[in-house]
Length: 236
Ligand code: HPA
Image (cartoon, rainbow, N blue to C red; front, side, top):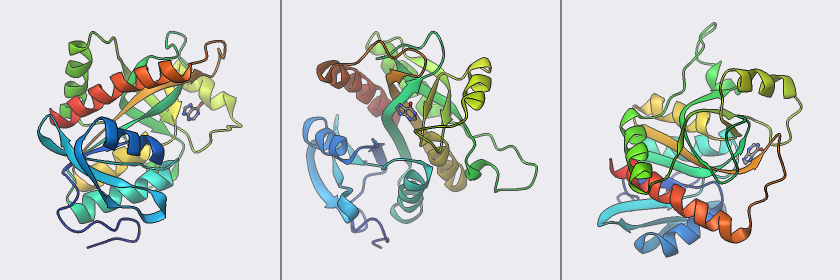
């Protein structure tokens, strides 16, 4: 069963998966958040660990950056390892005026200029949405922590260093909250396999207000809140 990008044996990956972008963050989640996590795959330095959270088996594995990277891992996890739910837990850049650095944004839908949305059928404008069950679980988990998480649209860009401010402007006018690079690919893979997916993003920067820098300590605390929200969504 090992795939080109995952070397775990059948049954070594849990049906519930936390998915940060950064492989080192995946390791920190395995060591500090999950209980009894064991390394089950390490192809290309992308570790996958399986342990438990609140007594339920849960895995963590990084997506890498961008839609092509998360699409490979999500596809192999859903198709070959029977993963049922993936919750991306990453960062985004704020673009809405009222979204601030350190906020948690729950991606109800993901807009994208990527081909994942346009290749399916000519003239089709594919809607890439999160799992309703996971979305509800995330909102409940946020409320339990007294966290005022924002729920709305993300823009999954193919560019970190974008060249089209006109697209961002239109998306802001349409109420989009933040820009990141993976949610649309994950939501497409989930739709294809009729599985559940969600993206929970901590706002790490704001495209139109760079004055508020997160300290390393603050980043860790905000990330911790997002992690609780993501795990709550997986268990919902
Ligand atoms: N652009 C794309 N992805 C991001 C950003 C950004 O500004 N910030 C965090 N992830």
